[in-house]
Image (cartoon, rainbow, N blue to C red; front, side, top):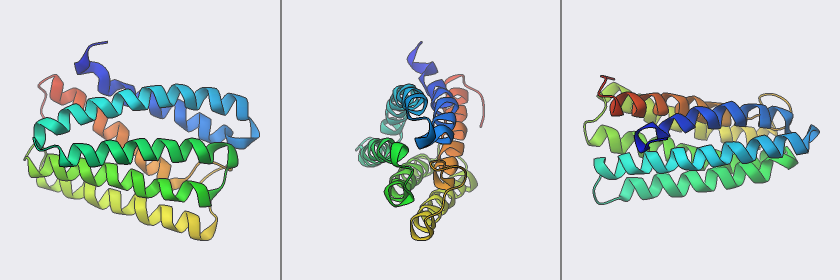
Length: 174
């Protein structure tokens, strides 16, 4: 796989993470295997995103924020998966929101995306954060023990971002 195609691993992350989170604590072996594959794909997706962001923001501030938030997100999700505990998973929403907002701000600031798209990303990040806070406060999950609405929101963003990065590398308009 070429570097230009690495964003496609965002799709693999989502395709493996959703069933892993649905299986959750009820099927720990299957969930762990799927989430391990999801983690591999996610880390490569995150690296491809960082590579793009460093071009948008040469001092690296946003790229650093995104990578730190992305790594912390995955670690917290991996910890919450076997427990199925919203109190453990809710803080991952802060990390996911950091990735979404940091990426959106970097691309918007560099004028690589339309203003409305950048604003939508920032609002989406805020929504993921607020939903995560509510999940923790209300001891709530979207489905089963381990599928959180904040995680689903983040995964939607991953799919949109992977699509954008792939189209950008192919020279297609947004």
